Every structure is written in C-alpha cells, then in structure tokens.
Image (cartoon, rainbow, N blue to C red; front, side, top):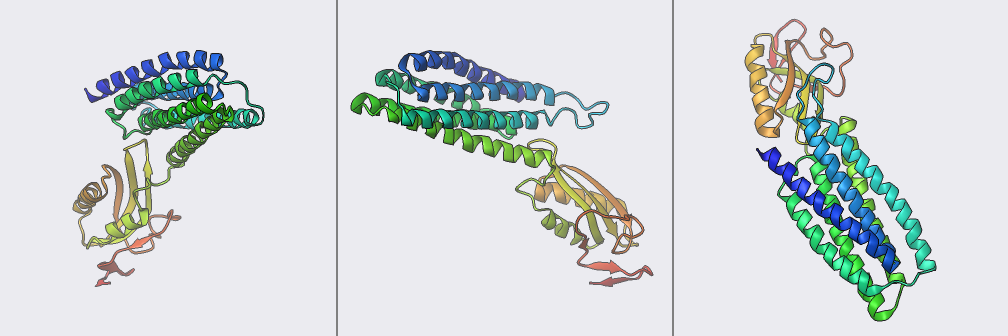
Length: 312
C-alpha cells in the first residue's frame, strides 16, 4: 500500500519536472541564458533520478530466486551510482561554459530569466513536497529528493541573476548563477557516489561500528570469542551481519544464538543476521584457519585448551 502511494508521488513529481524542463529550455534559448539552460539540465537529471527510482523500486520488489539470492535489491544502489556520474559530467560542462561566459558574456534578457526562474521555484517546491512524503530511507528516493531540493536552490540563484541583469545590466551575473548551479550539482553528485560506493564495497553502514558490535557480542557471559564479523548493507535500510561465535563448552549454543540475535535487533536494529555458534577456545584454530578481521575476546568466561573455564 505504502509502496503504491510512493510510486504515485514519484510519478507526479516526474510529470511536473519533465513538463517544466521543456518550458525552461525554450526560455533559456530565447533569453540567451546559460543559467536557465543549466537549470534545465539539472531538471533533466532530476527526471532521470526519479525515473530510475521508479524502475529500481519495481526491480527491488522482485522475489529472490535462482542466482539472485538477495533479489534485485541492489538495483537502487546502481541507479544512485548512475545519477552521481551523470551529475559530475554535467558539472564539468557547466563549469567550462560558465567560465567562458564570464569572459565573454552574451546579451541576456533579464526579465525572461527572472519570470522563468520564479515559476521554476514553484514547480520544484511542489515536486519536492511530493517526494518528501515518500519513503526516503531508500538511497534512490533520497537521491531524487536531494536532486529536486538542490534544483530549487539553483532556481533561486537564477532568479537573482535575472533580477541583477534586468536592473543593472551586468551580464556576468547569469554565468555566476550557472557556476553556483554547478557547485550544487557537484555536492549532490559526490554525495551519491560516496554513499552508493560504500554499499557496493560492502562497507559497514555509517551509523554502525563493527568493533563496538563485536565487543557487545563478546560481553555475553557464555561467549568466549567473536571473529569473522562482517557488517554490510544489501540496500538502503537493509543492514546485514554475519559472525562466528565461540562459546564455553558447557553452554547451550541455541539459546546463545537466539539471545545474540535479539540483542543485535534491539540495540543495533540489525534484523538479518547469520551467526555460526560453536564450542571452542580463543584463537579459533580448530574452526577457522584464516579468520577475517579482529577477534573479540569474551569478557566474562574463557576456556583454556583443556576445557577448563575461568573468569577473565
């Protein structure tokens, strides 16, 4: 139900942006304004971001089957990568064009720029409102929202440049506005690439510290050691954890596993966990020839190699 409402809001925002983008291109050509044309290009990336978000939502809803054991949930991360690269390519073009027009500014029709930009502010505000009501926990929807929000700020800069050209005749104001738009696009594009790259490289979510999680798990009274601890994100809002847990010889593995899974869910909001729980001694020589990452020693009970238990 919620997903259907989100799709309708995204589709509504897409219709607003695509419709006004065509108007802005015509106005930019007639007014000789690079600021309006750069805004239109920014709106094109907005439309692209929303369209990709809609496609990614449909793909992510496909069930896991065959070789795709997580389904298509990473589709939204790929769409975020494409959005980020597109923004950076446009930044390079508008930096070049903006500097060229600073040096040799064309005649710009200030009133047309001002009216078009003010109308664009209203259109982008409506699109941003629609997207703000959607579920923005997904990186692709949040990316689309940030696109539209940045474009709203860009329209404000363009409106100011149109007013300056109209009242003072300083034609370079239009190029300055285009450079401001490029800076906003650079910020948004870099953030999308950075955040999506963390997911693709299977880094731990920024709000989770694997070392802290390891220490918390190892603090359980029956845990001897935790190693091979991996924390990653399948897709936005889907943190996942796996770990090898060694427990004291007298402990029951099943209650320990259930207790640790509940702890991970309640304290760290990690619902998808895979815990291999075995009896063993610190060092894991009998279980893992090459455990990945640091080992977290239990803080309450430890076993020696003869199976004797002592307080740490």
